[in-house]
View 1: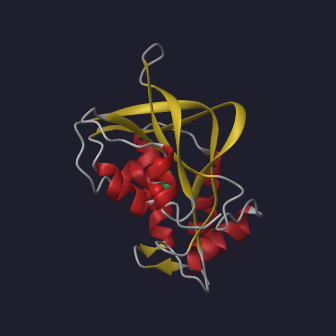
View 2: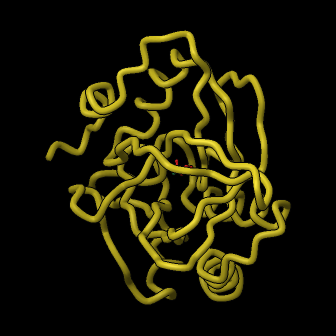
View 3: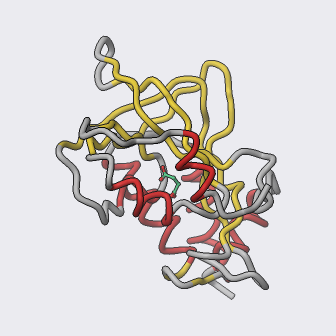
Length: 190
Ligand code: SIN
């Protein structure tokens, strides 16, 4: 599979109608909404956990020194909070470009409140994509994030903005907050 998923995503979900589509964001899409949207609502999805397991050589790192960004890993019983956006289909040209480094669009069910659910799209970088880095000890992940930087900025900015956004959502994502803590206490001192 090529790392660039733009063409694959167009084939997977041809969006040629004028119907708005719900998009669930769980990473930078929570705090960096650089696209027009009709409506935005806090939401959650079930059965997935956020992990800093995806490599980034196009946004928060380089080919020689890839950074780490989040993807979702299947996790029965887990709940992942994020932000849902109702967008017009032409917005996906921008989103597909932004998420091109290994992320594929999938359909998912997202919940707004306990009872209100809608179907929509989500970008997930699956373990079989070439940029996937997978698990590593949290201090190693924090150190990698502390030293990496790419065309969209420093990797630690991505982590810190995500952690702030999750606090605002009232989320208690131990994976993200433990890495943030390691970064702030250990990686900044040397
Ligand atoms: C997302 O935010 O939903 C996808 C991952 C990212 O762009 O950080």
